[in-house]
Length: 351
Ligand SMILES: Nc1ncnc2c1ncn2[C@@H]1O[C@H](COP(=O)(O)OP(=O)(O)O)[C@@H](O)[C@H]1O
Ligand SMILES: [Mg+2]
Image (cartoon, rainbow, N blue to C red):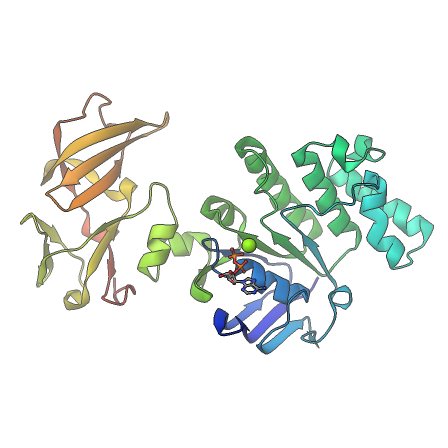
């Protein structure tokens, strides 16, 4: 297993900046997830690590070795693609062992490693089938097995679960986490799915337009998003945002005239208040809002409410009455649960 250092790497295609000055040290054995919307640069970054894309500036180190100018085959990496990229004319065994044969591994090594990977991924009965005879989930396992047998020092995954249905995705997610534990491997994983990212990552890197918004443990990013974008990106339903008309000391005054007490910090900087649907309290004294829709989610309910003429909010609570549409409720916004952002959409210091 190896550490990876992205030493101020940047990438542009012509005049388009796709990755801007990114510096990241990934520990040996760490599970890192690059997450961001489509087009944010995730695949480009992964392909730069793999050597499938050159860097415009900066260096890439795997372990102590500068691999910036190494071809992919000499980097000690294996990559799993969203498309699986299996050879259709080869059976599963042939697909899994292909890379080892190219590398002229011994017959015994190939047999041992293929058997072990097949057992790990529970595809032993499929070894003689062709890819066309496999389901999407089975093909994905074959692609992962093919990556494992090469015993790379770093695994790269590019949206490996995107083509699977929701139930299989959730299941395979757990298997990948187990695989990471049992191999102790360094894994770099790309996804646009924030739930997948949160569930798998030791640390996640949130990308937006080729720029790092925030790097940290999933819980850290969820609890203390450094930017409004990260706050809105993580969590379903998304964080609610309120833009007050003005700030008076420790109080934010909304367009409706309603007031929200702010936590102790440099409140003069506040432009936007973020609050998660599960952090809003219902009942007691508070701001009156009208419910226009209630979603039943089984374990909880989501009320969609209107606050004055300007804001629609989502409130998450089991106690919301499903027949409550068109009725009024009162909401309380606990000061210690508010996320305050400034005019540059950065978290206000001290909050
Ligand atoms: N070969 C290329 N030439 C020009 N632009 C590219 C090329 N590859 C990717 N891009 C652009 O780089 C940006 C990031 O793409 P990509 O890394 O695939 O994003 P993601 O994987 O996050 O969806 C996109 O705007 C995309 O259009
Ligand atoms: Mg991509």
